[in-house]
Amino acid sequence: MTVSMCKYPPGKSSGIAGEQTIEHISRNCDECGRCLGECAFLQRHGTPGRIAGRYLAGSADLLPAAFSCSLCGLCEERCPQDLPMAGMFLELRRRAVREGRGRFKEHLPLLWFEALGGSALLAGYFLPAGCTTVFFPGCALPGIRPHETYRLFRLLQKRIPKLGLVFDCCSKPSHDLGLENRFKEKFSKIMMVMQDRGVKKIITACPSCLQIFRRYGEDLETEVVYTLLAEYEFGRQDSVGLRYTLHDPCTVRFDPDIHRAVRQLIGSIGLPFTEMAHNRATTFCCGEGGAAICLNGGRDLGWRGKRLAEAGDQSLVTYCAGCTSTLASGHTYHLFDLLLASPGRYERAPKAVKPPFTYLNRLYLKLKMKVLYLLGRW
Ligand code: SF4
Ligand code: SF4
Image 1: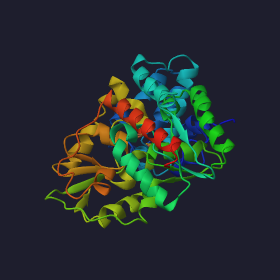
Image 2: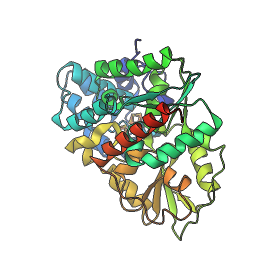
Image 3: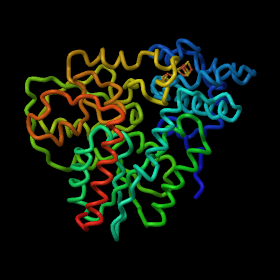
């Protein structure tokens, strides 16, 4: 199966293919500066139009710098011209890789994480006879919340009895690091299994996996679990005196259906919550986006600190396992902690789960599902 690489980026900038973004921005950015205000990366390097112009004039120093942009799309939201900046910085990363200037030793742990996610040790395909829909929890959620991942699968199964389950990595790290061939090779293997086994729909738990399957999943129907769960009934939780606020992952900043569904879910369990100043389409990146956090130049952009400062002393809820880990601060919850918990169980936010326990959790969950599958207790 061949994976097309020209579908990035989605949302406001969906009409512009990656290859053309640099020229497009160079021609159409009028230097108004509206995108600069909240992005330390642009404040350091100049307006997107100026960056594109410098690159087209032959300056190659921006190729490595592009790995410090978190590809978060906030600048696209601010831009009156609807210019596709995240697409341009991804395209600069791809060109850096092609020219041999895009490999950093700091990215190796992330690439190992990805490789392990797709390895025989941690990957698993459980596709019962007649299965046309699969749940794809991604790499991060089973690592930090294996029990909640299991409960979520069982919950979905009540409405979709032949639901399959796939443990694998969607290969977003390779994608975002501009490693086109590696991404194509890994992602097309997943797609081949889906096509061979007649899978028509994929339900993701992770907004990043959703983004990848939407862009490259060809005819596969995609849905994130939150829009499905909005139809379920959950027990009301005792807020135990806590006040909550919500962090929207930047990967779904242009997806109002998901924003609505998540707020509906929080409202349905009765938790008092207030919006952060930057929410929905104007949300900040948690700091992990685009793997920018791996490099010093991306780590010091201050996204994480700004997000935690907006949360203040409120408990912070998010619905991306990667954001949950990056923003862990002693009062950070994944939405599933609150939805799937016994009442009052999470008076304190769960502790951050780190390697090697994330890998052990994934292995435990895969083996548990394998045993249940082999015993016919699916
Ligand atoms: S970090 Fe986000 S806001 Fe800044 S240039 Fe990159 S995509 Fe735009
Ligand atoms: S907001 Fe858009 S037009 Fe204005 S400087 Fe930024 S990219 Fe250019």
